[in-house]
Image 1 (cartoon, rainbow, N blue to C red):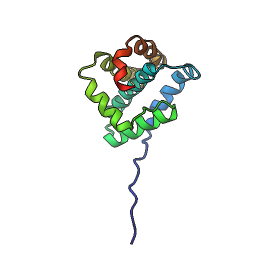
Image 2: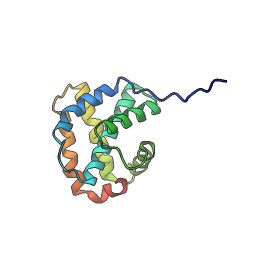
Image 3: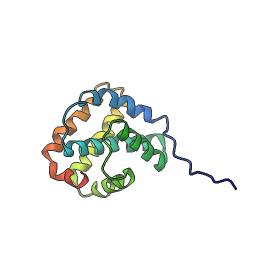
Image 4: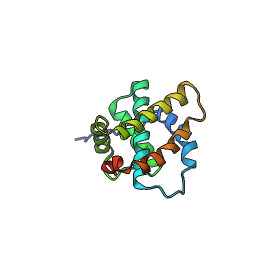
Length: 144
């Protein structure tokens, strides 16, 4: 009798877009002491980017989660809870938490500018999330 292992979702090649974007901006924050609120803000920003990529590329939800999880793991900024639960939490908060919704939108807009407008400065947008999240720490406490 042969047992079939559940096939893990492969990370789509579209993840390279996010990796290229983040390669430039994460160099600027590597080695810095980042507060939990700033880390949460970065996670939300990247989720906005990933969701925009999912929509633009017609990716499945599993592919989107695989990309998001891979990116967070690569940059050592994974949430303390499983990624799918974190994403569900953010999805619920977006409708009631203006600051989280704003960071998601900025992430989505930034990746759009990077890809469609070929804006080489778009990755710098990530840096603006750190002070914003730290100034609005109460909005991000629920995802830390």
